[in-house]
Image 1 (tube, rainbow, N blue to C red):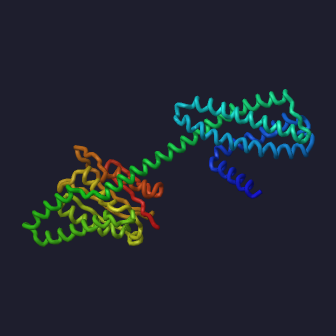
Image 2: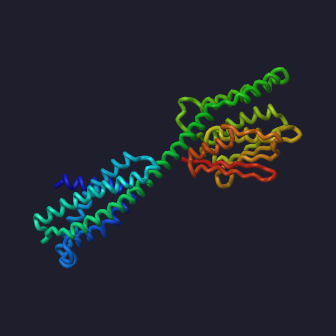
Image 3: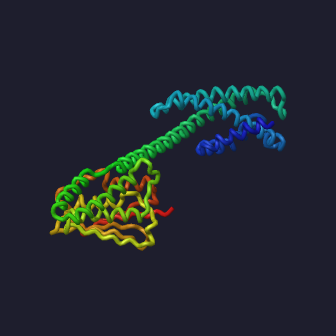
Length: 361
């Protein structure tokens, strides 16, 4: 008895896993089972409560068992014709298999009913033929519904694979960015340092100190032993102040960067190197000169976000975005935070701003 209950429980569990199939099955059974009962016992099926209840329960169990056999054959057919363009082959194969299986089961069941005289049933050739035609019609409907369920499951599988591919691409972009140390920035720093050594030794010493802080942080967030994907804003701000010193030393009066971050938000978390990415993006796409200085502000908003804003003075020659640019940063936040990490980008005639979410865990 326990074996049968366990098997029945497994069956209903497998049906529930595919909700579309679940709805199809239990929308069809309420009218299909009484139809079978009427074809077997005629008016007596609805006139006698005992025949109605007993016949319905027995026929329902037999229908579920027949359906289980159909499920197995359906999997076999879908394995034979798995391609999208093989719809016709699948439908025809399902119809033939369902018809054969269900007609054989029907005949065996009716023969057994006739043999034991279940509720006074006797095998009638006319009703048997009529039942066969009904089974063929139901098999055709079942073949169409099987194709619908198969197409839906294939669509779900394709959507899942597409999301996995997108996530893998974002992971790849993130890893590329984490491993990237801009060689042009290093070259410019060394070039500035060579000039400072001869012209301003004291400044050169501080420049080396700030440069070491910058690269120490880069090694920290890009290191092979790093497990976290986020950094606290406090650490990022300390890094960016050293980075700003290098930039202001290099561009002198051509760039002015201010940082106004409320202490309340210093424990918030962001993706590492986000501020460097946005500052580099502003420098890459705007004129930076003493005559047209670039002003960049980094500040927290009243809603607990981080706004990076610069005046707009676009270069005449457009620079192409690469993996270290704004597009990649948006992809990183999409991968790390989904909707919670949406980056807001605003541009008008005089300014360009990017608002980063701060994550609290």
